[in-house]
Image (cartoon, rainbow, N blue to C red; front, side, top):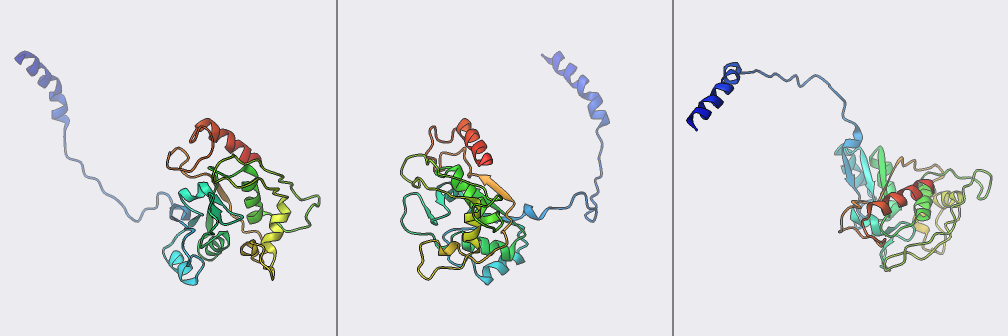
Length: 235
């Protein structure tokens, strides 16, 4: 045993002989790669009644935030943007897409919207994209895009089937002024004819986790997610 130990020490000896001190210097003024503004972001929160205030916008801007995520976090997988509700709740959140998009326009250069993967439909997602980004024109003209009727996954928390009409319909809703008698959509009538131009859209939040609301079977299934992702991309 002793002979083996001496042999091992002898084999390692050349390495010991070459060991030496090293000096490392860092030039903090040298730019290797610029940091993109989107590296610094925040989730917006549906429950914040002060989301669309000048004070909040100033704080976000002063913090150097480059991107805002709407609506933010796990609630995304149960949120229905058209009604500003989630699951089977009848009450509405304090800050819908009107307020979160206002904050985005007045504080950060980029935004990312998390689409409802857990209980939403491709048509619901497509209408949201159209509301945010489609140009205003004549509904039903040659440049319009029909979205159609969806088929929600059944279960508590799923929205009822809806005719999602066409892209120009939602762009017109964005550009409209509130009605004298609110039909529940006045919060989305923001009088903006110019698209919001939200570039980034993601499908669901942390879809691998069993803490996420998911009506599909199997829940958190990778194949199901891939299939739904393709349908959302084509919607």
